Length: 136
Image (cartoon, rainbow, N blue to C red; front, side, top):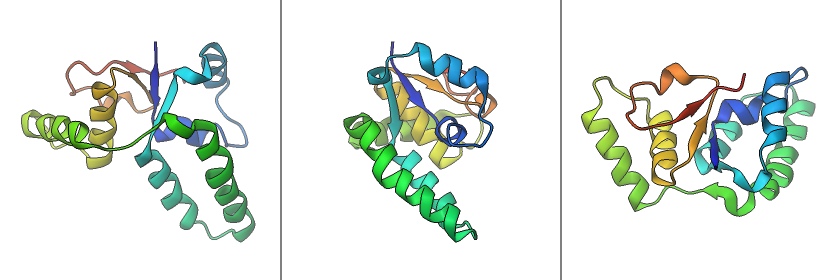
């Protein structure tokens, strides 16, 4: 079984006091079964760039560019034509307007047949066939 980690899962791992439940869950999963979206890198970059604390910002840039990118390597999933088509379908047939990044992440999980791991399950409940896990 393989999993797509939402941005909030990755962000949680670098908090001063991360969720113990999340760490217990992550420890049970082989790292090669964990994936992230290229959009997660973008969301994290955006958050880092908006920081005022230069020391923290610099440390997080190093973490993002050296640790996170290297750790996930070829398990960073890009947006391609198939995902774009799935995303368009999801948005066209959704009862509510879906946030762009969340729905692209959902389309990625569906395309690769991955379970989506997120704290924000309510943001994805309306997406049919998407399997959600909240280990928090």
